[in-house]
Length: 319
Image (cartoon, rainbow, N blue to C red; front, top):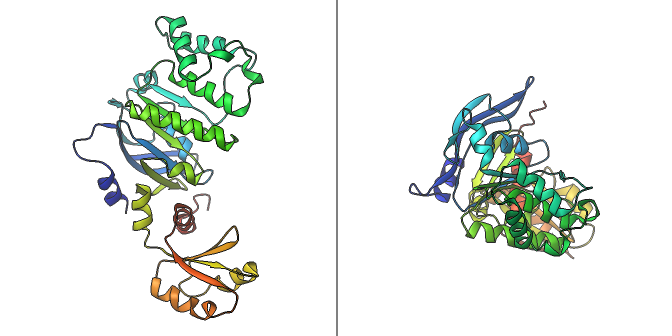
């Protein structure tokens, strides 16, 4: 799946901003990232998905030069990820999961500090321009610690953009942010990508994953699948039925373990029942579909169905 999906997402003539293979990282005896490969083109928004502890953050840190891979090779922004990490850092904007700016400084003071760190020319003009670009001018004197989650997120993004990076790495940037702020954030990301900025973003939200140009799913340190959302769904080979009716909890318990039933997942007031063998799945579901009071509909699996299925088939690297 991996090679076919990757070939479908990129073209040979496309400009690769990230092109790595064989990336491996161990902490002690545990392999956190295992033989990882990915290619990301200029202007792409590439989504990283996977459970907590899957190696997403470690991979991002290797790509931007904060960690050195134990094995593997490749380039980021034209620089060798192992030998030229300092050059990579100068051209990357990295937004961490946790708000990491100074809460007792104003927005303008925080950005001025970041500008000093990166030795940005015409520092005051750059700060003013960035505040305006992110809609923060009216709050420039406000203390960062007094901002709501959505505004802190916007300030963190402003800090990442201040030195005009060529690559933006976002590590679960919208965790704990309300839906309106998340949507506004993603509108900004798409505007930046349209201007040629490349974005690599990790997320747990399926609606955000669907807004990415391409996706990579990582579980327990290994890349399980990559491609567009449509490609991942098509290549999963999964058949899914939706069931609505009474006592869905009891129905789910009966269905689990039946031949051809690989996954039974509650989705609101319905159950999604999925399997890789469509014929066997339908045979097992046939008697249940005859029960009075239930409505069964065959549906196209969604990204969440696909990723839960991938997760169930992954080998835990803690074991």
